[in-house]
Image 1: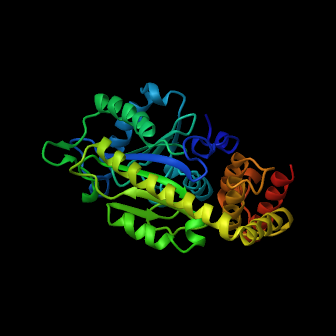
Image 2 (image 1 turned 90 degrees about the vertical axis):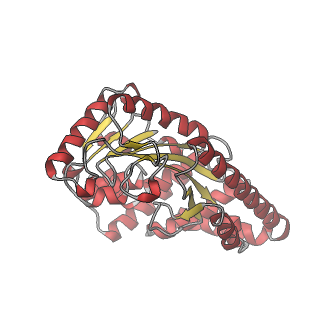
Length: 349
């Protein structure tokens, strides 16, 4: 498997399948782990970092869950490749910005990815399409259990898994779901909903997690607490909250269809017309317009587009993806032109 192979396939989380896939785009579970006997990454010297990298990479290559996986030396990747992996939600922005003894492993289906020597020695995640959080956790738990048998984790009977950031101590688990909530935004309910769930131990962020703002009505919602609860309890709690948010979004969509259908359809079809005719378009405008078209597909106002095509365009129109497709660096203007060309081609077909 090569890095260039990823451009030719659709990641598992973009398939538009699974429970409530019209609202819940993806389910993701991540665990933070460190190897006993080695300092945390930011306090480790060069030799310790290299030793951790060698040990974790060896364990992953011997794993039956990572058979045929792609292994990448992060320090040897150029800026476009790093951004490409961040856009695919396979690597964090933090892992991409600094060099050194860092690596990334990605399984063939892009369900599992493992960052080695990010903030912690191991940041492993599983990500799947739709509202599928418990099954996603089971996939990651199987890999985590296997690695625990090959590597000795830093663990305290009192505190749980020891991590570089105190907020991850305990289970070291973060469960998150990416939601598309356009109706709650249009009806001005989103602020109230997010404030309510934040009081119950979750946090809402943008497309690329911590430090990013919501764009195009897409939100990542994840747990804040990792200690004092089991992994299953954490996942069960966030699933209950997400079901409430999904229910609120469905009610808001129904309200718009009953009371403001003409105006809503006008916005949807104007967005469709712009995307099918634009010759230059930015990534931010693209995401905003995709949000409206996706809503149009979900409420059956638009019937000639498959959700999977929109999901593909959602990722292929990102800056690094456009440059990987073209096989060269592009200026901002060239990217905006290529993005418009790609969208017209896909929607026209």
